[in-house]
Image (cartoon, rainbow, N blue to C red; front, side, top):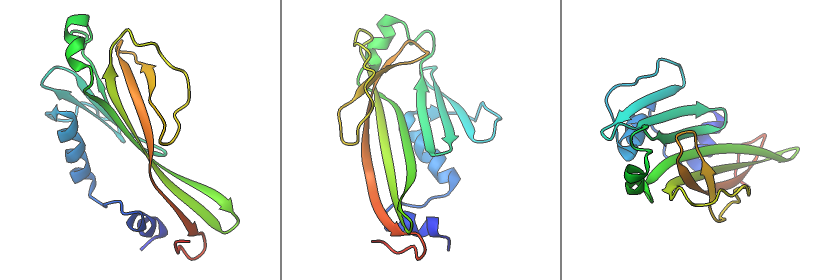
Length: 162
């Protein structure tokens, strides 16, 4: 068993297959149908409202976001999205604290749709801090809140928790 699997188990992160993970994300975001993208590391699904769910593997984790259709991004329809889940991003970051100590952290960023009149904030996201409002290409505004999901320090050589 490699060190990465040991760290994930120590942090209490449930290991699952790629297919079961995708099915979980699809269900939570309301995706239906088959994958529309043919690129490796990327999935695009429709929703019953006509939006797109974009799932993308990044070097530091997984990003899932809802892209509103042109019809749904118009003001009368958009108001029904306010407060709903707009995206989930899970990141795994490993820092080298000292020569033999690594800090493994996982972050979870949850985004919800906000009123279009909400001013955009350009502050950075801080762990356990408040939300930041972002503007997206589909003319939506989203509030993102980032939290530290887990933090663990490990001996780099032995893999033992410190």
